[in-house]
Image 1 (tube, rainbow over the protein chains, first blue to last red):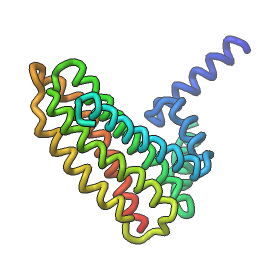
Image 2 (image 1 turned 180 degrees about the horizontal axis):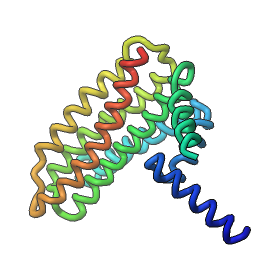
Image 3 (image 1 turned 30 degrees about the horizontal axis):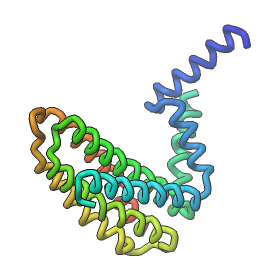
Length: 66
Length: 141
């Protein structure tokens, strides 16, 4: 890729960040999330809640309240 | 370029409407759960730093535990939710979130009260995620 092309991409990226107020990575992530099946997102959310539950239980055990 | 960006934002916004509501709820539910994880991590960190007493840590985790258990129930309820009044698990979640918030607000840190800002920041993220979720449920019911 030529230096001018690289600069062009940098400009596009910078403009996206400026206009949207969010990093391009976030935009890509939003697209990826939109593409993910609902069931997969729900499964991830359920898993995260279960991890939160396990974390709270583990902390209570550490604190002598298990 | 600017028009393309505006269109992109509009597409993202509209794609969240209509039959994709459950997906949007699922995304906010995930954000909510991750925010609660952040709060749990903050508690553990501040406890390690010695600015939270053992009793305060116990109190916070005793509030985080039922909230997380209700989070599992609430996520499962989302799968079958067809709109209308928010599922019961979500209503209970609101009550528990209020109790947790009160505990954190009332917590006086040992030695370094400035570190409370960190805890409050994490709580704000949880409340913001929850508020978005409940607002969407109200708007799309």
